[in-house]
Image 1 (cartoon, rainbow, N blue to C red):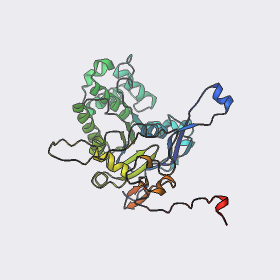
Image 2 (cartoon, helix red, strand yellow; image 1 turned 90 degrees about the horizontal axis):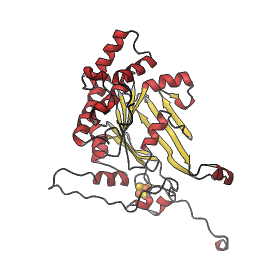
Image 3 (cartoon, rainbow, N blue to C red; image 1 turned 180 degrees about the horizontal axis):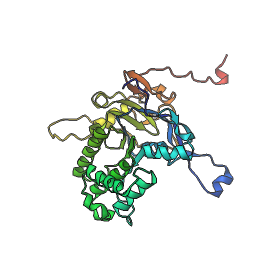
Image 4 (cartoon, helix red, strand yellow; image 1 turned 60 degrees about the vertical axis):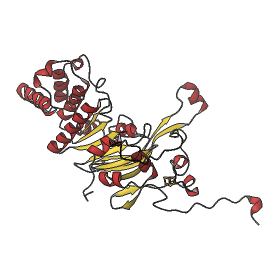
Length: 343
Ligand code: SF4
């Protein structure tokens, strides 16, 4: 990682959702919450692809939605080029929404079925005043179609006339229309079949190199994340537990959770023997996060201290951060002594 300031940084980001809503819970004063994000710290450097990976329910998508302020975080900061996005007014937010674009998982529901691609793109271009004449508008739309590998002659078609992979390309074209600096792709190849996934990933890579884009690529699929990312952040139950350069993370993971995830990635060679680490139990609910290390009920290496002291995300090697007591040992806090034992 370079010494330059990050383009995007999240500091101690929290997103708590009330568990019970409605009149009765308000009368009863219920304060139970689901801690979807519980103090996430991450940074994204200009021009890189940060992969964010973790099991379903770990808070990856909530993180993306908090960054673009689809959700208003409960606490913490989102800094874009050093400025706190959570304090932006409407004018700054409009500019921020142009610079930071999101591509969603489902290309079917992301496009308005009643609008042609021409109308969809021209609406976005008009809204952000990207083009100033009819000719410029037409050239821009044709250029966008070509850049995502689609025929400009298809601009007059409706979304249902395209395949799933083509629709995701259209979502990419719409995101690129406003000349963004950062793209957040949330599970954006998960709904596609494998061959289309590969084509879409290659498209992301090509565009990133050509346009110098920065990307946050969110996925539950480690193979996809390994393929596309420069650095990877592993999330578990609302927190980042390991962050490292991609090759180093996949070759030498330090956190027991990352080790288990990587050991479960299928290898396409039947002769290669893998030592899959089977995690015990299910992912605990974010409404009832275990004390200490939130991974301790499932960790093979858990020690007594792990259920009492929460590990902090700290550097273990250069640019390699991990939150685990095995790597950064701490002492357990002294146990309180019962009054009758005190002499
Ligand atoms: Fe396992 Fe303890 Fe490390 Fe948590 S802190 S991952 S429980 S060894």
